[in-house]
Length: 467
Image 1 (cartoon, one colour):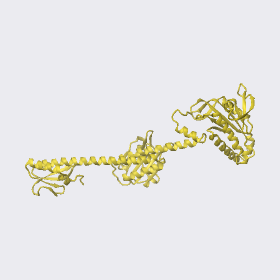
Image 2 (cartoon, helix red, strand yellow):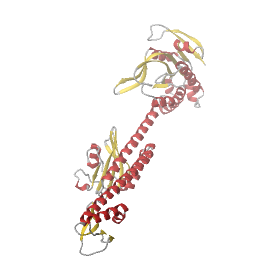
Image 3 (cartoon, one colour):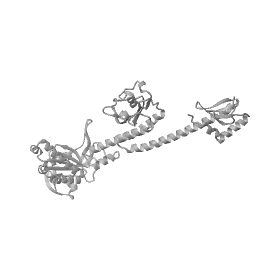
Image 4 (tube, one colour):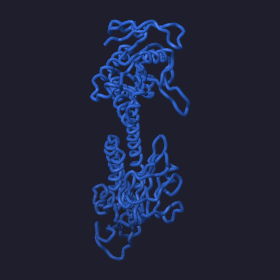
């Protein structure tokens, strides 16, 4: 059916004026009919020549008359062609507006979504609206296995699918070269790998990010679909938006995983600070820092282990660690490591604290008081803990080999804290003179003595915290 209303065209005031002027100029008589021969202008007459008015290879009307009537037919062909171009342009502008509006709305929905399956669901819903299909699937590349796995599918794509890998099959090739394709008959394509689902036509669009392709959108039809360039354009645009949203969701999941892992070692508020910190604010590279170090150890733990079954000891030890770490975190400390029943904590790393020593002592007192009030009597009676605290300059950061790194501290103050912890009896908190000097007005102390510590050339003054 013609996109031009020929009757409306020749009825326009300006067109009528042109026709009448040209008829007068040519001094001739004509009549105009539509494509079906219905008279639109002039008088019906027989035996006259007919000159077609054609637009885009289609006859939309006729001009009847002597040979001079061919000039008027040419004029009307020109005007009709212009009218079609205007309509085509207007349609393209309208389609473009609708497309922009659609993708703007869809982008808002997708970017706000942080669940990969929900994103895939939105993509499938929108694809079904505008592209004829029997099956649609969103597939993501598993980095470890290097296989494409279905995130979500509609139609028979929900059923078992032939495994795809980069470079194998149409989808695998699209993933590798990053270019969307239309394949009208997959059976004529040598790359096609037949699966359990019957398909004939296929659109395959890569989910591309700045770091490469992370998956595919497959849109297929069991019957020949004769997909158009507009369909491919839509699928490509949809894939670009979806890829950004999926990457964002994956980063959110990764950040959540990292956050959960970090919160096992450092306080939640510090985790938040690390994640949101600007580059350079917090560094894990080895560097000299002034921090406070706390060592805590259960007295005669090995002997106590002989009294109970290993399973019970592990259960009690986990409860003990849970309670102690909770106290350390509440004073903004970082759990550096567990060594058997020993806890090593740091105050002032990786993020700075205003009062490292004060926080460390408050944490130590809190740990001892928490032990006294444990709900499990066996732990309260048997897990008697000695604590040693020092402060000063150490080298702290990621230390180790390329295969395995530990975030830890190295230096004399670390060794001294370990020695003080060994000296402390159950329930005691011993500190070095460095700690004592900056906290003497905040806590009550008594002199423990001037002692020689293994590994130190000079004797050191040690103080006991009274709480």
